[in-house]
Image 1 (spheres, rainbow, N blue to C red):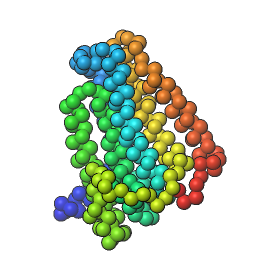
Image 2 (cartoon, helix red, strand yellow; image 1 turned 45 degrees about the vertical axis):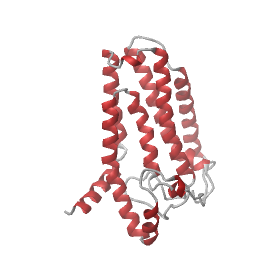
Image 3 (tube, one colour; image 1 turned 180 degrees about the vertical axis):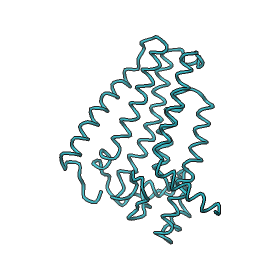
Image 4 (cartoon, one colour; image 1 turned 45 degrees about the horizontal axis):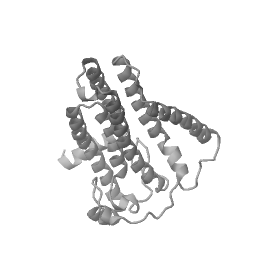
Amino acid sequence: MALQEEMEVQGVWLFRYRGVLPLIILLIGGLLYVNSKMNSVNNFLENDQFEIYFELFCLLISFIGLGIRIYTVGHTPKNTSGRNVTEQVADRLNTTGIYSIVRHPLYLGNFFMWLGPALLTANWWFVVSFCFFYWIYYERIMYAEEQFLRRKFVEQFTSWAQKTPAFFPNFSNFTASDLDFSWKKVLIKEKNGLAATLIIFFAFDLAGEYLADTNNYNYFIAILFALSIILFAILKFLQKNTKVLHEEGR
């Protein structure tokens, strides 16, 4: 099999199981975090006040990623930029808004969302390894996606790809989105990401204080965690039992 075809096959397979990457990162990062707490490896985090600020910095990094996803999803139509796993879906090619400055904004958002927990381990070798693994993993997924888009949209895709970077944004290319922002779509699509992010940070904080035999909990994260769970439950109920969040074409 030619390398081009092999990369596409790998990308299609990884696309179906792309939800596994966060779990791998979480498992390895969690083990490193536990080890550092039990053996006092990361001495610069022994200062409780500094550790709280560092946790908030890592959370900010994750929120930047979530913000990128929210902006992207909020400006996209139905059957684009989705969470489908069985096959590629694209009723149209998104080329305006954030898609005018970067071709894969959702994966850029994912990178920052998971960079936060990676940084939280304070293990810099792990952070570097995470960045390298993310690049190898998503490079193939992006390649497979672009092959699908190239076949479906042909010249429109080629023209867009020639002037739009794949992963590192070029802000000078920005063109306003041709769709209004939809908070309803965001609330439906991104509630899982918000809840998952805060669950992870809350769990890390809880585990860290338990292993260190201290009780200097980050109450700001704890409050955000509780609010996110309540919000998730409300949105899930509304999505399942009402049409309040339904929006035609989005």
